[in-house]
Image (tube, rainbow, N blue to C red; front, side, top):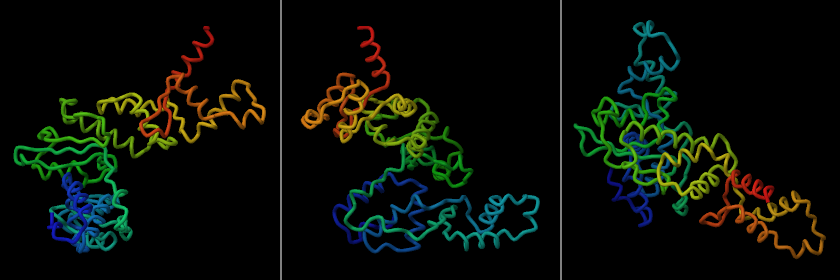
Length: 328
């Protein structure tokens, strides 16, 4: 990577860049090279904005205009029988005109389709978080023992693309498949997922679970309301310690109920109504709804999460409580 250390920047920006670049993947490095050649950064803030724009770049496995033209023809589903009668380089240049980019180390890096937005303005560094990943792996091979990083999820197979994280990493490693690689380091976006390397005997299984976690996080429970808060609270409630446990929890979020602490009054009113209780106006004015709701939730086994933003429990607990009440 270019000597960003020479750019004028604050100490906080320097720390941010050091941490972000520590796990820069091969694919990201290619994209960053293209972006910096397109517009040379003159400050640390410029460099940070280039890094924040990496997810908006696309990569195509093409090392020439001819290969890019073939990609374009394949994308348009033009029969290969007709390709020999075409000037594929001309088609590749036309593709470049429509989708500007740069050839970097055998990959055509397509610039973001819209003008880059200024994500870092000099004051919001704390909000510029690298969070659109599930698992990062540093893989090594016989020909590249120092290893390279890749990040999941990789949608290239799902979207039938040729320039995904795994493909580009394998090329850099001189490896034919994942089976030819070993793992030097593994990181998970979930803080309590534990030591991934001790959890998996197979790299393929680790990648499979990393992919699934990434898909789940991106889909946000297929649009489930308050997914991020519910998932985080459920993970905390279940006291998970492995990636597979986290995946299992993500598949049964419908079993959990989340009661935000700023909604305790409404929850208390709902409980009172369900029990046929109507408080006189003067009594209601003196009634501590929040305390009542908290006591009821705790009696059902619900737990207050660490940041005290919500109570979390399971529907099964509710059913057991009701059954116990009827038996008594």
